[in-house]
Length: 182
Image (cartoon, rainbow, N blue to C red; front, side, top):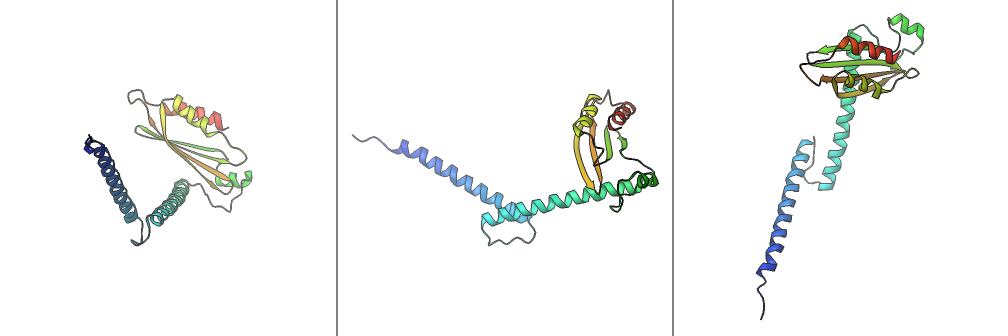
């Protein structure tokens, strides 16, 4: 008396089908990823394609960081603040530029806030304290970035109002941030 093996083969066939579908799906995803890489070679192995994708993503990230730095410098330059790296952090040169570190700018954009802080490497503050002040005043920090140019550190924070009907009192935020950085 032999029992039917069809019930034993059914889970095996199902696992094989699932694995085959998973491999097909992974191949499609690898192909999509490879198509996004400029000058990719179709004949390279999947491992090489993944390595190329990882290095390309790193290049893009470095490019984004460089562009953010250029944007921050352009914004500051448009406001009359010179960010050339030939400057040192001496008080005389900062006074000639019309500002003394640290510098605080707070801009309100509808339901959003942009905070730009420029500090020297010697006179620094904890960024989490700035974020804490913004959150205590009813803003939620969406992004925060920093760039180092010469002896200066440029912090840029973007926040949005947590509750639209309450809003954020920017003058109080400005005063609290000013107290923190000075």
